[in-house]
Image (cartoon, rainbow, N blue to C red; front, side, top):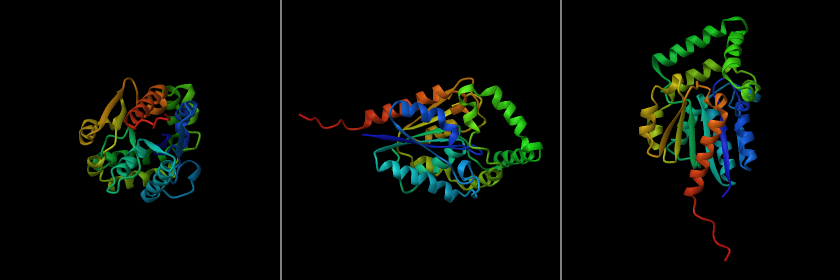
Length: 247
């Protein structure tokens, strides 16, 4: 049975951050769809709303489900929104799920601190872009460095998106997830704080921590992340009933 991989980007970036994964999957003959959330990438002019984000993911997932199985992959903010989506009261047609760099509850002091830091960067020349570029130049490999920001950076959507995450009921959503799930974090990811809790709440979940890697695990270690996707696809294949014999 055919499988489509649907990928959801993190805050400020866009669908282009998944180019290494899209190339890898298409090289294997597997359909891959990377979406732009409202206010990001090709949709930079739109306001960000959670309703719009959920709608974007749902349309991509249901379109893919018409062709076969669906592996949903989300990073950072995209991972948090996807967690809420996969664990919704009405189960969507998702057959397996990879949640990267998103094992933290976006509420309280931690969220407020992040928003304050982001606003501080916004007040710097060019909204802090020179500092971000300097960090990315020294942490991302050449093969993904250009991809990460190729769709532009959604500075205007950032605070609205961060604020909206506080209404997610992730603990309830996690308890409802009933598909094979992989939580993937970099060793030095600031959002690892609740990784053991998240993993314990999803019966079919595994935790993968990538050594010497930051929050940007998909771009910093693209081959490792591609291998995780391959594991998920192999797990889905193993769980599918065998094709009927032609004899």
